[in-house]
Length: 101
Image (cartoon, rainbow, N blue to C red; front, side):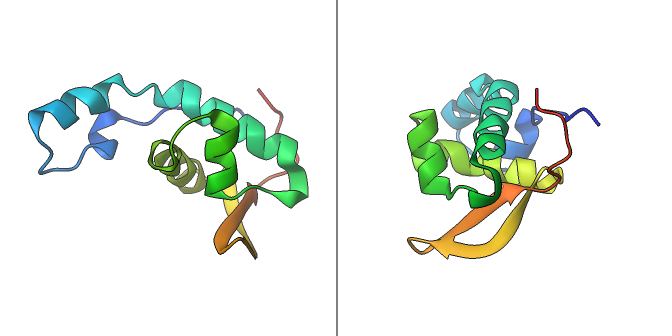
């Protein structure tokens, strides 16, 4: 199974967003960011990552990675491990058999 990376900008832009936010939403490279985030989760294995840990690894602010985590979860690529670390949910890859890209 090949993961489908990238999210339609219309899904990440608020309906009441100002024009500047709409323009910014269309410039987000969700395909690359989702692929990178997924790679970090694959490498983390069963230990998983919190959103804070992913933000640090991707060298991005937390609000820039939280949407990528949600997108990967919604696509069935990540799941909640059931654990918490530093009061944050630990997410893991949903299917350990999936080939990494």
